[in-house]
Image 1: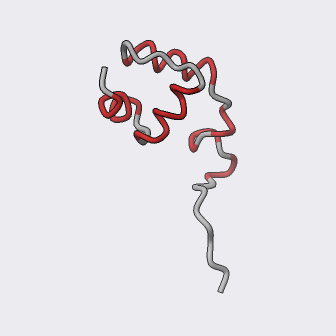
Image 2 (image 1 turned 135 degrees about the vertical axis):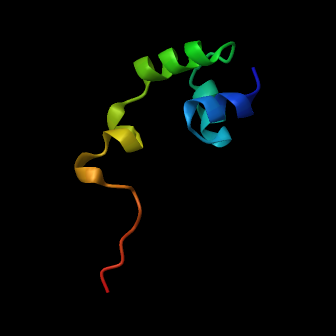
Length: 62
């Protein structure tokens, strides 16, 4: 499976796909990659797991 297809199917960037592959994510199917990510990614390290709706964007307080 192409890295671009994985990225699109998982809703992440191609660069993140390459990082996850280095950590051991399988690339033979989208389902296997999703299952691996669900088991191996810490929730607080993803956008969905941020507390209080923090988008990760820097805010301007001026």
